[in-house]
Image 1: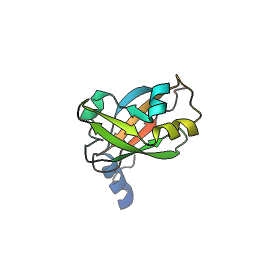
Image 2: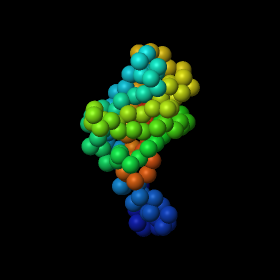
Image 3: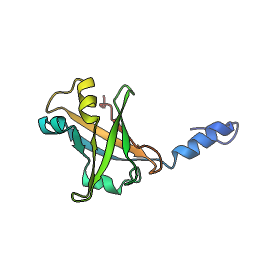
Image 4: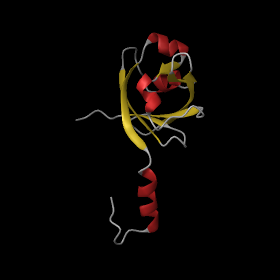
Length: 125
């Protein structure tokens, strides 16, 4: 992170803009036969309190460890009180050669105004 001394305006604006993003919601997701068949992954109920999501948002970007991305539909189940992704989960899993039982640690990133990201956290070394 740069200091104000000698930093150019773009760098300062970029740092400021990123400070409004939420990076604090991580969760574990398992690849299952049923969520692959339905092409649907439910986010934990606690995700509803994340500032990254709002009910008007209709899509989400899934990002793997390498930085490649897939667009998925984002929906909110009023009856279940939780968000889920569809139309993209199965392709994300297939393209990343996932097997049933594989686990991902996802980090939900966003500011509630732009398309949220669901990023795979890299394994710690």
